[in-house]
Image (cartoon, rainbow, N blue to C red; front, side, top):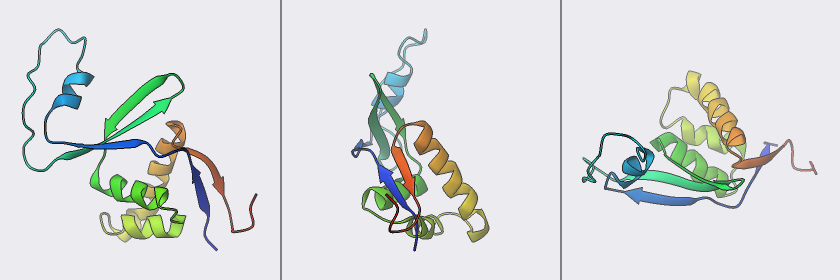
Length: 119
């Protein structure tokens, strides 16, 4: 049986067509930036609380589907299957490990459980 990942409450997701988030990231910069329409499709952004700080960042397409799988209750093997649609089969393990490390560091995952009978 696959491993289950326990996630914190789902972070908010925004899909922005405008550079509003980039402008927010550049706050405090000495060079003013204009809010403009982004080229092409909207960009997904993840927003979550980390201790007392609101955090946000854009998502790559493969991370977006991996997070959707994770928050939909999918197991690690299913998450890897989703990633294989975006990266070559030989790089799936490295990409999955990289995403998991990032999610752990950011507090999006609280526990990793092995097997169905794990506490």
